[in-house]
Length: 444
Image (cartoon, rainbow, N blue to C red; front, side, top):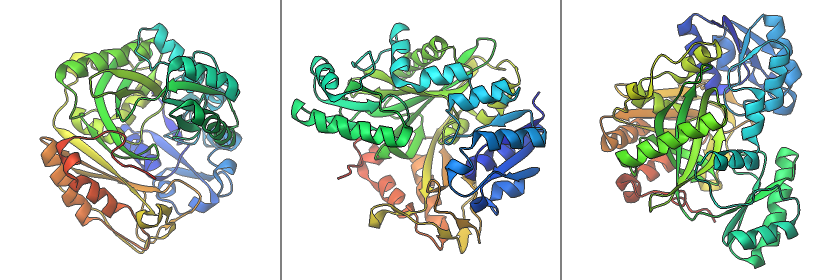
């Protein structure tokens, strides 16, 4: 079993991992930038190392600094959390070369699935339904226009590398294509340093459904049900829930079996997520596979009773899964709201600053994952998410009522937040009825 883990991350996910390690009797090492000297994860870990200045490019994205801290601390494993280096195949390979256990899939698998075009071709070969699209990399607008004509409009231009909604543009007809392609390619080049693109048919207003996968080193693969992540703004998720209110038992079984087949086709190991687009007619398509723990993993933990972080560590230690597919049962309904330090009234402008007062709710069926405390200064250099509020109910309606109640109790003073915005979504008649898709929030 792994004895000491360095967490190559910050914020609430670093705190979440540290707590899981404590319960397993595993020592922890935190790393932090100069801006995060007083961050909660540095206080909770057994050891903490400064790895550079505030910009993430000089700290949390510095492979050399993180590996050095791992070696100096004597940690035998690294948990990357999500974001930063979590899906960087070069970093995973660096760990492998240094004899450090990377808590995630192998570098080869990350590289294969990180390239959306290669991932798509892998899934298509395995019989996983994929959205009609280009098979080969596309580098210029003329080739892209020819591919789009064969696929059929509307199409979406996507960066072959990267994620988070960057490097994506929709073209509804040939007249829009060249500008959409050039804008998407420019953004991809700036965000990921790579202008390789591919073209897909654009599925209008589907649901965004993802299946949680666990795969051990012995070849056992299971899914832990789905999460509906359709409430999103500019491709950034805001509210997630499990199970999806639109899935029948039959469709859940079919999609789950497809997700397991996809993971096996990729030679996957550890925790991962198969993401699908689901049309109103019940047809679904593979979108991508995330090779890391997800922000929204707590809703799956609520409805299955399985601690995903602990399972990641056990798998990375070489342990087989202690349960099979038939033993996984979904119970009740869970919802997560991402609380961001931002101002929805001012174009969702980030709101860094000092938290002068804070109160989070508790009680039966309420969970808060956060690294915020009174007196903590939210730095301006990183993602604006400062907390996740997660609730569980016997059914969806109880979960919605519990979330509304919990949101009403949250107090975060000193910075702006999106709490009222989340509350408005939960009160919307279509959300309450489960009539949602990725177009629920229209952005001008």
